[in-house]
Image (cartoon, rainbow, N blue to C red; front, top):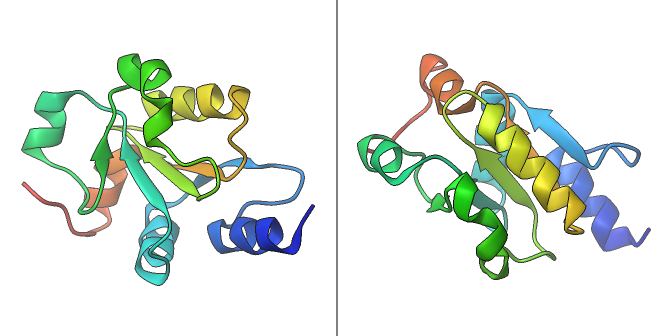
Amino acid sequence: MGAFTSIIKSALGLGVSDPAAEVSPQDAYARLKASKTIQLVDVRGQDEYKSMRIAGSKLIPLHELGNRLREINKIKPVLLYCHSGARSGMALSQLKAKGYTQIAHISGGISAWKRNGLPVEN
């Protein structure tokens, strides 16, 4: 494993043996504040996204993910979220199967993010 990959995994809090991980909303917020290279992807539906989202996120609904992989750079870290963590967990598995290694998702989704007092856009 190259030094660059190790640095990125470390920045995302991903262990060498577990490239697919859950991160707490607080950890996700800290990582997003510290890094401009993380791709934040919302896998909910368009109506959910319009009503509330995390700033800087890109909407790619779970059912469209397979057809829109080219929009997610494999070289940069990816952080996924949904409403509660279920869909983002499925998206994480899909991306991992397609060769993405620098991926994580927010435990509890945007619901936990908001419950923890973290900022959302409406």
